[in-house]
Length: 127
Image (cartoon, rainbow, N blue to C red; front, side, top):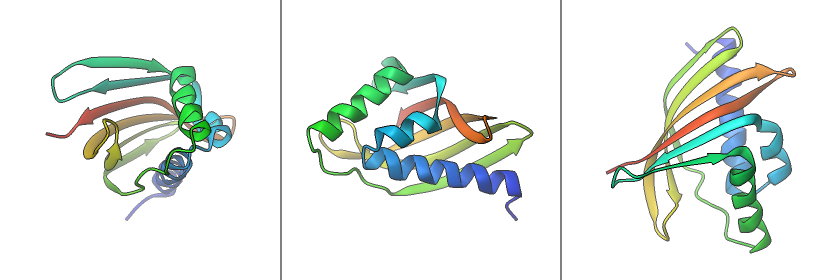
């Protein structure tokens, strides 16, 4: 049975998926913590690290280019919430390289200002 905090965290991640896939930059800005760090590791083992501003700019560009909304498919594997911190592991299907592919995300959150905020996303291309 999912606990109250875990349900709040799941709802935040579902909101994140909905807003990110539709390039809703304003809502993303409130879900992403000011100290957000996004670490992406591709299937060649290459690492790229982005800040909140870099990631927000990516979604702004997609919005301004009127890109087609992204796939919203997700599968939650693990949700853990204790006090003011949480961790989520999920799979997503996204178009990062011109074709849709399955990725795995490890997401850390903190509860500040009466809301859950994403502090770190680690994104792995699934092989």
